[in-house]
Amino acid sequence: MGTMNISLPDSLKEYVDEQVGQCGYGTSSEYVRELIRKDQDRKRLRGIILQGAASGLADPVDSDYFESLRARVRTSRK
Image (tube, rainbow, N blue to C red; front, side):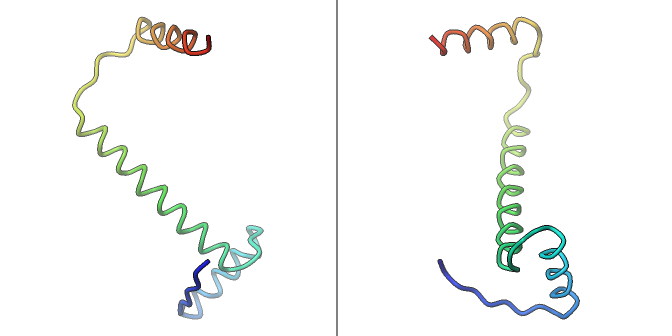
């Protein structure tokens, strides 16, 4: 695992320390890693949403659509 040192103003360091204590993180590194993971997830989700928005209109979703999904699931289980 790589190491990274960061400098924070006192107010941000105090905030990180509070979050570590209140949210059950063992160390400030665990807290920062979690923030980075959440940021990565947010960026992935944004990409998926933008991709979906650019894909155009879809066919209407009705009871036939859901029945076809159920049939696919039933077939895949066999």
